[in-house]
Image (cartoon, rainbow, N blue to C red):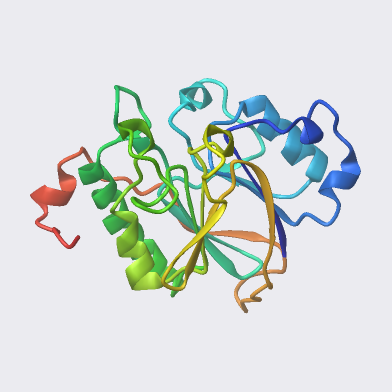
Length: 232
């Protein structure tokens, strides 16, 4: 399965100077956030394949201008071509905003997402906007990653963690790829193509998106602590 991964910057080669040959063989598109909704609408139309996305911290406009034809996987788990994919939105909170998330709140989201991952009996790809703390992030507060992601990495060992948020143009020393144990962490800022084997599942038709959970989110920021699930 060939996956086009995008984030943060609209690629002129896929938009202003578009050629359909650049989407040849693409089976799935994954957006890690902070992209114009019209860009996502354009790509999903031209590629005619599913487009999954998580919200970035600058994607509040999706609330009134959603990218039609695309599927939001914030706090959700899906299966496509047998590959299990889960998503988590936003960045570390540095100002007010819907997709500004504290470390405490992200712990709660991770804890709840774990139920869907266990129901799916595993995880192949974790899609986030922000990176894990200490792996492809920066030291300024807006670009710090989440420590909470390590719970998913430690428990489920996804093959891939795809993120954006830290633009590759910020610094020439920013790595495209890093590794945490058995998980390959990839900064897909702008665009990046990955190829992975299909994992056919008897309950899933070939090349069909199947929802396992949809948008599970705790009620309020203190849910994690009110329920005494301090496992991180």
